[in-house]
Structure formats: C-alpha cells, structure tokens
Length: 273
Ligand SMILES: O=C(O)C(=O)CO
Image 1 (cartoon, rainbow, N blue to C red):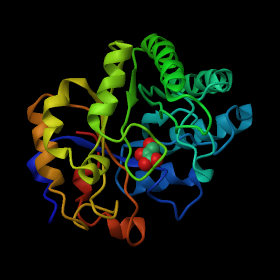
Image 2: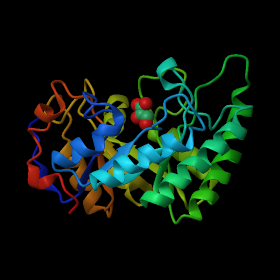
Image 3: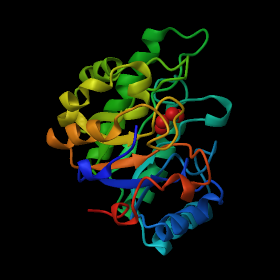
C-alpha cells in the first residue's frame, strides 16, 4: 500500500538497530541526523553484555549527543538476542543481572533524557514451569515500573510475532500482563508489524490510552512502508485521533540501503513535529 504520511501528524524516530546498519552503531546517530531525523531509538546497545564498561557507555552517550539527536526509547538488556534470547524479565535466576543492567540503562537515560524503556518478556524455558516464569515476570515488571516511574518514564511491553518460544504473541497476551502487574508506568508497545502478522491490528485505537510507544514496519516482510499490504497510515491516524501523541519508531529492515528505503518519507516529515 502506498504510504501517505500526511494522514497524521505523529513524529517518527529512526530505529538504530534496524536502520543505518550499513554503519557501526556509534556512527548511526550522526547518519540518522544527516538523513533528517531528530530522534532515534535503540535495542540494548551492548549486544550480549549486561554491564558494559564505563568507556562503552560514554561512547554510546557521546555518539547520541554529538549527533544532536534525542534517544526517545531504549530496550533493556534482553540476553543474547543473536542467539535467540528475547528478554530476561521472566527468566528465573537472571534477575540480578537484569537489575544491574537496568541501572546502566537508567544512567544513560538520565544523561540523554530518555523516558521510554522496552522490557522484553523472555522466552519460555525448557524444564521451567510457565507459571513460575509468569510470577517472576510480574514481580520484575512491578519493580522495573516503580524504578522507571522515579524517572517520570514509562516501561513498555510488547507482543512479538515470529518468536515461537516468546509467550506474548497477541495484544491480549500483553494486556493480561499489564493487568496482572497493575502499575500505571507499565504500558503497551504497539508494534504495527507484529500486530498485522498476528491479525489484531484493527483494534490499535482502543488501546491508545494504554500505549506508551508505537513502532512500525510493513507486513509481510518487516520492511519499509509501501513494501507490503498494511495500511499503516490509517492505523497511525486512528491512534492519533484516539489521543496517542508519542513517537513512532521506524523499526523495519530496509529492502535496499537505508537512505533508499526512506523515499516514502519526505525529509520535512523526519524531524520532531
Ligand atoms: O525482536 C523484536 O522483534 C523486537 O521488536 C524487539 O524489540
């Protein structure tokens, strides 16, 4: 479907873990800025390392500040994602490691003004009772939500498609966790790609009040808007009309080079509105 970003007024941000991957991570904030973006977001920037060195943290913070962009959302440490991990929130025995890495993330946030934090729930683990995992997750999310609340921030939780061991696949799954934890700082990450894949994209506006962050990619394929069949602009317009006024992260895998994949988004629509 041909994108028409004039249909809503939401601000976009460039996802540094999926866009501009032609360059090393520390160069991507500058390249994003040169491409016209004021805002960026990122998965955990230190790969499978929960507690990076001070030098690595400083280098990341400098890359963002030197480029003159805002880091609007950051994923907490999620384990070894390249090896298939999808978060530590529900992983018994790894809570101390998660807590230490969260303090690193909050230090970065404090220095950069970041207020959205994505906590991936974690995969089901062989030999571990799912109920035990859900109990660990509820307690962890409660703690993380309170901690993030001290920063006036929001914790966001997302349902994911394409990860068979990840138990939150639908919006209802994610909302059930939000309800169980019952903290105002814990909100939904509405990822239009994952929602289109599982077939529950038409209700996004109903959850606008509980949505702390939005991301997009076209489906099928998880590529740039216009590459698939999802009417992304209609859903973004519906979210905006229902009161969502946060950022929309461009979390897609470019089908060409990143700059070429941005042809759908005029340069004047890439900055913060
Ligand atoms: O792994 C994914 O698909 C994500 O969106 C993580 O934030």
